[in-house]
Image (cartoon, rainbow, N blue to C red; front, side, top):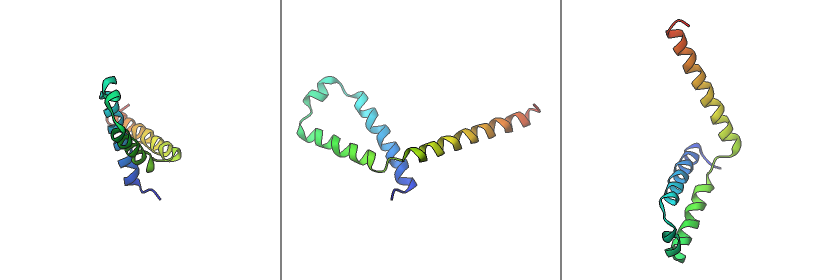
Amino acid sequence: MTLPDEELHALKRTHEFMRNILTMRVTDFRKMGKEGFEQWRTDCYYCIKHWPYDFVLDELWVERIQKMNDSFAEGRKQYGE
């Protein structure tokens, strides 16, 4: 069972992992040995191990949109619209 804090950590770890990939150059990939590749496989495993399921991400998205709409509604009330 994956806990919410593990899902959040997985999202953050994956973000960092992808940023690291983007900063690498082609020559860095070519120089990577077997140990480096195995470390990547391990990093990928830990990124995906606690990745939230789609329905969890969908629920988070709906909640975020609702909060944003509530915030806009509060702003309109403040300015008398």
